[in-house]
Image 1 (cartoon, one colour):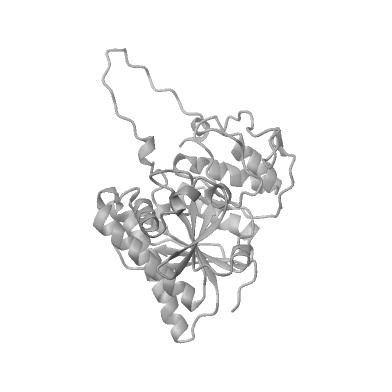
Image 2: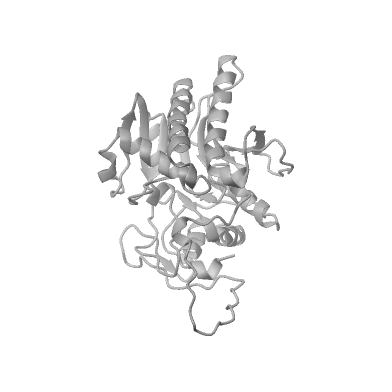
Length: 347
């Protein structure tokens, strides 16, 4: 079936969900031995403590007065989330999609031995064989994506599948706008990645869009297979954390060295990798992460489409969903996100 603006399948592996407290290498600190007397650890706050919202007075940034948004962003309704933390993250993820893209479906890629159930009618579970142990999580994620695409190609060959586009994501994101227009605005790409101005990790693997045509699915599979090969041969020592992002960067830099300069800008652009058309979308709009700490830099862009609650930010994701559920106002919810700092919402 042909896709409309709001007909998408969101696909993510449950392996990401099961480890909600993974931290990046930048968050690891060495323990130094000192002669100073030990202090009792301070008690973490069990609620959000809000600070000033950055970006006030700047153009194209969310403007807040308290927790009241002064800019207009779409609103809708949704359901309550589960009390269990991991399932709460999953339910919040699905519910945000149901709010912003109600005609879309969610497919959870998981280990065949996993046992859990979902209440949402727009979500399904798909088991894919593999090694889901902690040390191979990110490697298995790429393998699961490839396995899913291979299944789509097989079903298309025998006429079992219609026509749907796909977005592979982590479970700790909030989709706050209809993403279907990406496939209309950029009609020639096979695969879309999100980039940021980061020298070593310019590409984030938490959002990968695939055009749902047979050609798009096949070429996305070929691309991910090259990423998997680079991962397996060069970055296995980083398999628990950053191997997928390092492998993505290696493949892109090898084929598209010009892309490195464009990663410092905030504009979408296209590139060709061995006949595969790759669309690069700025993280500032399609994979925006609340900065850690009280400083919010230059605020939140008004064109933000996806908020990624990485690492310790997952409590903020749940707080945000709870706040939205009580207000039905996405813009006000974004003010809550903008005014929160890491130490205020850490697990």
